[in-house]
Image 1 (spheres, rainbow, N blue to C red):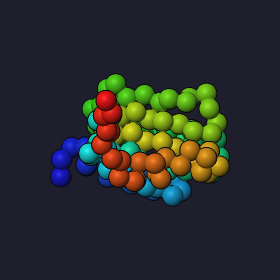
Image 2: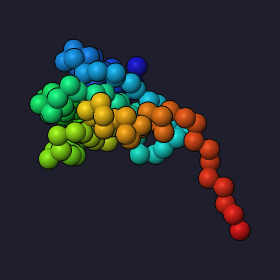
Image 3: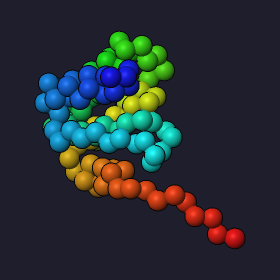
Length: 116
């Protein structure tokens, strides 16, 4: 198992152990160059979302990812933890349903066509 796949498993386990809801992992290979994987989960309250994001950030840092950070730190509805090759989104259920990231990224994205 490579380093990023191992880290993905650590993050999934951390979210599960801390009662995150509806956790999914999306393989972004051949879909985007921004990351290898995207993990999406829901929290039950703004405090739960904040705690989950801090725990994920700590796991990234312990794994040697120094440039990771939390986006949406002022938001009570979502957080994005950028672990360079692994991106974690944590939403409240309503905001997650609104953005439907798993629907957008799970589908096969066709290559762009050039029109002249």
